[in-house]
Amino acid sequence: MSFVSRGFRRRRPEGDVPAGRVPPGQHLVGDFPVLSVGPTPRMPLADWHFSIHGGEEAVRWTWDEFRALPSETITVDIHCVTSWSKLDTVWEGVSVDTLLDAVQHEASYVSAFCDGGYTTNLPIEDVTDGKAWIAFGYDGEPLEPEHGGPARLLVPHLYLWKSAKWVRGLRLRDDDEQGFWESNGYHRRGDPWREERYWGD
Amino acid sequence: MAGGAVLGRLTWLPAEVVGIVEEAPRVRTLRLEAPGWGGHRAGQHVDLRLTAEDGYQAQRSYSLASPPEDGLEITIERLDDGEVSPYLVDEIRAGDRLELRGPIGGYFVWAASQADPLLLVAGGSGIVPLMAMIRHRAAAGSDVPTRLVYSSRSLADVIYRRELEALADRGDGLEVFHTLTRSQPEGWSGYARRIDVELLREAAWPAEVEPRIFVCGSTGFVEAAAAGLVELGHEPRRIKTERFGATGGG
Amino acid sequence: MSETVQARLDGNAIGGILLEIFGAEMTIAESVCGSCGSLREVAELHVYVRAPGIVVRCPGCEAVLMRIVRAPGRTWLDLSGLRTLSFEH
Image (tube, each protein chain N blue to C red):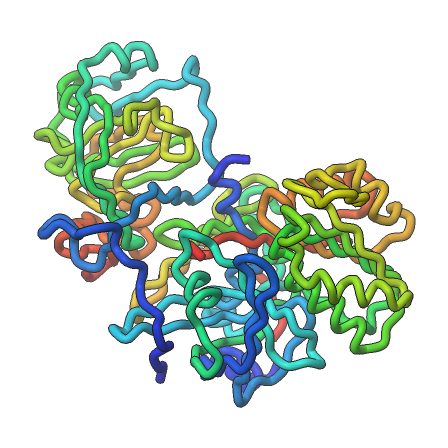
């Protein structure tokens, strides 16, 4: 049976908390915490490529080819399952729709794979229709390695573990293959507004 | 280990703050009393748990600064963006209560019954578990040859400075080498840089002495110090390390 | 040193959690990596705690040895990266 430690309280949100923008169980932070499951991969851009497998044909872009694709700057809120949220973050990236347009497929799911071995799975609806990007810029600068650079998946409407850092490609699938965290207790979808953190939530 | 003993260490014990010492800017020692505390070994740590009025709980690990002979003390460094350390260093008062669990750790421990020369290398708040070892050595009346190499930002940041001076002055085999990495007082004759192989070559014993070695501090500090010691020929197996981080955010 | 390496700790940092899970002092437990076979005490393993869960990796080859997720009332534990884990009790 625990008791109260006088005067102790949870970290305060920075400034005013705008109504309706912070999901349940989250608090705002001013910095951008770095979370990682392993050492930061260092992939030289000359060797980097992004590929999509599982469609009619495998498609691949070198870094230069990838950067020649149409890209956009977006401002989004991000929510980490460890309970911090950050509002109005600015990213630059290529929409996943643009990349998937290069592939013929009828897949229901995608599995993102990354340098370092991390994987995450998503239903195709969660990465299409303007909901996901392969981001290469943050806050007006090239994306730093600690935050997933040179490029990461960005899926802001879901918990940030879905926004796989150091992403190198997508596998199109008919089945929902559980990724690194999804196979070990984390929710298969991860909607922060429904607090879908763990299996069974 | 008997089941009952393990269960004892797993149970969250209510503890009360009975004393506070301001050790350095942003660093404070709390003396705690916890009925049912079963004692500990030098180098071990405790898990601390705080509960807010709304039921929110936070948990952190802190090394015990006190030797087994002298109750329960922890020393905490305030991390600016932390959630728990600012409360423990700025807010908590004598009489306040929290919960703790332990002692924990079987690797990073030292007892005065060990006769080998002892080399301790500390970076910042990494001094805490090593101080428990030094205090235990003194309480046990040991004269095991012991060297402490202690890196701090400035003289004001050196934790337990006067006590270390007094213990080294006893002449019972304890030597303390300070290095101040950011600023030094006028006339400072000690080291004035981050630990490197040359500094260790001078301050630590040669590898032939075969000391038992404990290194504690941030990951960067520990890895640089351990690599330097290995380069000087010390057996990796004789080097024990403990990395401090902002475990869960401080 | 990169921020991720600074965020890396060692097995000492999860001594309390492992004590809870295994009911024994685990910092001195011996682990054998399933990928490279190296034998180390848990206290020496690379531990990442700043993540949705805890990830423990082999210092030699960086293979994932353990993943630990703690939710209210439930723990998920994946030890498939270990060949063996051995401890006294």
